[in-house]
Image 1: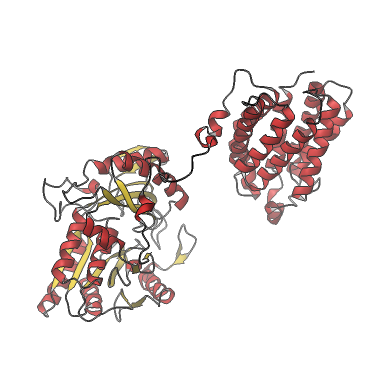
Image 2 (image 1 turned 45 degrees about the vertical axis):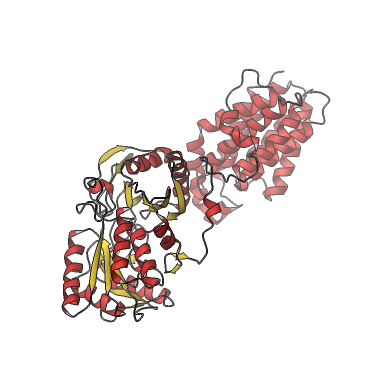
Length: 596
């Protein structure tokens, strides 16, 4: 028995049996095990007089294949061992369990083992009098030469089937479900395959159940463009890509090969598929650019799907599949289905939902707020004549950003590791808000007013507990300073602002000094500032910031007693608190912008 990267323990020799049994238990309302076989059949099957759509392939690709069995999609799926074809016997038994007497369509990815075993099963069924047709899925453009001009069915027998399986299965299942005969179901499945293209990219390999090392690897900091779902080599290796660059690579490799039949409507079904480890939020970032690129090319994304459909265990990567739609394919793609992994409700598609601008915004939405056209990242850039609040916050941003990774590392000791990222994001928004207030069209306003707005912006952009606390700190500071006549700033006024900020943070967070929070740096800062009211603002502030810096370092000797970190107990001992450290950096940087 071996622990996989996912943390679960499997016996490799029983993995297929175990996971199929678990699937059948969890989704007994939809599927059941095929007696004496490694396969599942829909509760709706067999249905007398209906063509049976039988799919299948190796384990390790869920939701493909067993997760796509149910009314309106596949009738049954035969499942092989990990990354291996099911045997002919398993395919035969599975098909028999689904056969309603109107014939069987077998459709699966174009891999040698699948072709041989499904082919042998088809021969056996045919010998017994069952009409059988086969449609291979050949959507992966990275795995073979392009199709011959004008050729529609099976454009390249050398190409393998990957996530485009889903489109072919969906069309075949919908056709069979509405009562089409076997010839029609096979024709439409082949047509869907001919209209489908897929291109993928991988960032890391996968580890199989029972294995102690990855099946294949991708060098750190690189991306394999065109890698297959079993680790088959890609077209080329490139450096790490941003989400935008990745989306461009996916789209570029598909547009050149996308079929343009005369009956096409300009609509394309879109599937952005995760390969097992890529998070949904990350895929949505990629899809944002995919959507823009497709629309710029004159295509209309139709019922886009973002998620996992054909995986490769814990492989890191994504693939993009496009199916060019005519009216018949679109109607079948819209048809309802109900499977463990994918459900489409009747009437669930609204054509108006696809009426988008190239930016991806609905054409009938309200005017985009002005703030969206001026991102905080841009507004936070140094200005030639920043006024006091903006200059102070920009200095704080620069200081904290320079230590972003270190703050994240400190936070990860007993937290979630996002403190550096969150505070930098919040300070960028704070700088933008302060600058807009101090130099707005209504005329310049006080530094206090600017800090009030900056506090709200920081809390909104940063989020989390730290964002709320820092937002309150800035807002309370601004509220005190705004009461001063003009922009008069004395050390006593700064001390009053520090006291108000301390009260707000303590009340909001419920923490006390000694519990390893930013209060452990803020408390000595305010006391030191109050003790030096006879000094000029800059001199007093810098001395107080020094006290805060020393106190922040001393939090390494404390054990967390507040918030999420408190549950980690002594784990946090020996490391300074991230919040106290970032506050000390901020206060020190602000002191450099003050003048006596």
